[in-house]
Each structure stands twice: as C-alpha cells, then as structure tokens.
Image (cartoon, rainbow, N blue to C red; front, side, top):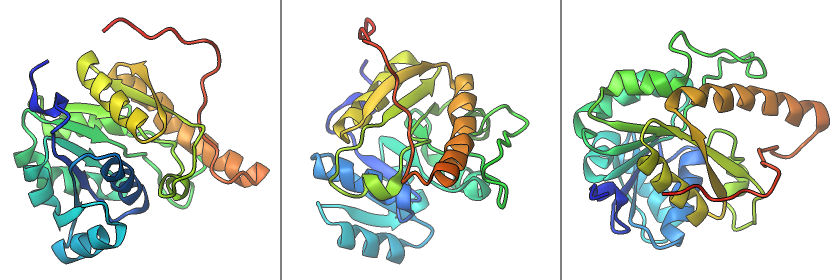
Length: 224
C-alpha cells in the first residue's frame, strides 16, 4: 500500500483532541514516537492541551489539524459528530479517518440508540463522502486509563471496508499498548457502538472501573 497514511512518518491529527479520549490517544501515540497534532474548536485550547500533555505534541484548530494530518482521528461526542465532520470534510479526501464516535443520547446512555444509518461509523462515511477512507474503533477503551502509563487488558475491534486501512489502525492500537483486532466491514461497527452502552450499564451495576472487551481463544493472525 503506497498511501501516505500507511507510512510510519504519517502525521496523525486528533480532532477533538482536548477531550478525554482524544487526549489519551494523542499522548500514547506521541509518546510512542509518532508525529501527532491535537485539534480543537479553539486553537488556543488545543495548544494549551498539547503543552500540558508534552511529548512533542502541537495544537491547532480542528480544520487545520485535519488539513495537516495524513491520519485523522475523530474523537468527539455524538452530538458534535455532524458539525465536526462537516468542518473537516474538505480536508480529508484520500486520507484515513478513524471515527471513534459512540451514539450515546443522554440521559439514557445505558440504552442502545443507534442512528437510522445503522451506526455512527456508517453515518460518518456518508457525511464525509467516498473520497475519505473511514475506519472505526476505540469505542470501549476507558479514556481515564489510557491517559496513564498503565497496562490495559483491552481489545480494540476495528471496522472498515478497506482491510489494509484496518490494518493500519490495528497497528496504531498495538502501538498504544492495546490489542487491535479486525472486526470486519464498517457496518459491523454497530455491534461495538451498541456494546458500549452495555458496558456503561455493567460499570454502574457491578461498580467496575472501566469495563472493556477481551476476545478469548488462541487467535491466528490473518494473512495480509
């Protein structure tokens, strides 16, 4: 694969990077040696967050971050997905967009409420257009754990219609100290998005500090 997003030198932009998940992903990747920029609605907020997190991170407005990135993470709440994708859409053609959005509708966040399109990821692809390569993942990672240096026994199920692009995202998950696994087509993202509400319910019911996925069994790596 010759796409620039497959290169180890690819710039990674975290749109919504001042939020808990975005900041955690940015810190882990930057600490692992990747070039990462944080995006936010405010360039000043993004710059302040980058300075606080360290590890060579830089900050800028969301649209500028998307323009600068070869890989673009979208780490915003469901309520902000439409507006954020509309803002970055002109800057992500030919790029790998990793959508982490979970369709949580307060106050009933423990109840599955998938959108009419079937999943937030499928909606993201429709909003960005076919020129963007949309992959989804990181739905059920506890951000308050990921922001630390702790080992996290958590699998990241990665969904997308481009297997090679999924492989790039799996590599990034592994780089963060997680375990990335192919979850199949982008439409399958509905399963992980829905399961997030179930995990929130489990966290509350059983007083768990950030439940996550772990796939059992001896896994044989798929052929490239």
